[in-house]
Length: 133
Image (cartoon, rainbow, N blue to C red; front, side, top):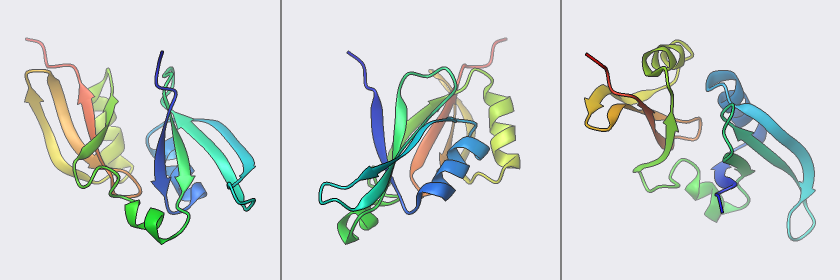
């Protein structure tokens, strides 16, 4: 078994696609028309990091209850974890692209980590290997 997709509630599809593909460098795996359970149009949008198996389903908020969850899917905690082999290069590229980091890089026993916000305001850990030497 494996986790195939994790739904991420967003305000709108296109700005979220732009953030994940243009800023974070994810691949757009699918962007297809679909329907809600009651027949209204929506899109099935999947992005994922290059080479990854697990992707994000970018789900546009539908109704007040879902809109309230945009940016708060993990109730203010870090809820998503992005691992990069080149931590420092990825961090610099993300800063240059305007990504908001709420905790600067630090070294922990498990490696390097910095906390950033996605387009919706959810907290993510950017993770990388520890520094050698």
